[in-house]
Length: 343
Image (cartoon, rainbow, N blue to C red; front, side, top):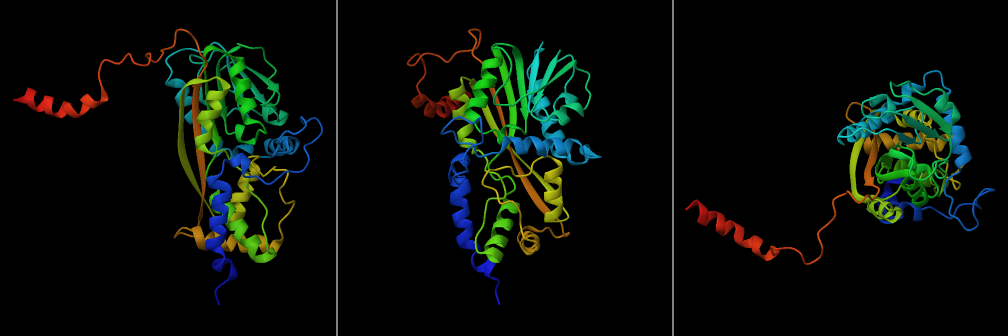
């Protein structure tokens, strides 16, 4: 007999794709419970920021917090590489959502002379990895940066902004604290991140309980990032994507490492628990649908990298409309001119 989850897979996948891929991720969430005290009236607050702070604090206090930091360290190194690509020294830099200092450990004092690290989790800052750069650590929310306008020459952020409730506001805060000609370099989870886990849990819950709830937080679509950065005031934008796939023994190890990273779901509309039978079914579905030949299962993390500059009059400006001296229509003649020149 064919399992019911197999029969319903195609219909579920189509419905899931419409909900989480085709729509902008922040619009794809179900209506959350009333926002917590202190949230502005009518604001959309998909994430419980207090819970996220507890999750990150718990992860930072584990006996071996570095055991689950492999992904953050890898992305932090890639952010640092982008900083090194800019041939200048930054007197003062800000790391937004720094965690245990995953970017700072890859930077040098020749590139960044002084660094300010900001995170909502005080335990993460207390247990931060030491670097050669003089560092000041501040407990603050990414959406409410406690700094004056035009303060920093460089702002970096790695795998933190996907948890903020108001991403446009966070980008505006970053733009505001940057000096003119300052640059923002960031990375965040997005798109198809953890689609294997998401789909396996939904299929198992549909089979065992007759319906499903979101167990993986919604992510921003790459098409939205450039627009949001431009609205915040950034120019000379660069947005690119990368994919990192990590193999695990099974579903339970995936979820254990996510918890160790402080990346557990903190959506207001999350389901508080999953039944044992549902979890076992999800593990079996994960293995059958996505399992590797050696018995492991993959987990895909899609990373969006973004670079934006704050305007300064010294920056290169686009030519005025109509000032071109060559028509695109002339490009078709280039091949003929080259052949004539060879003769």
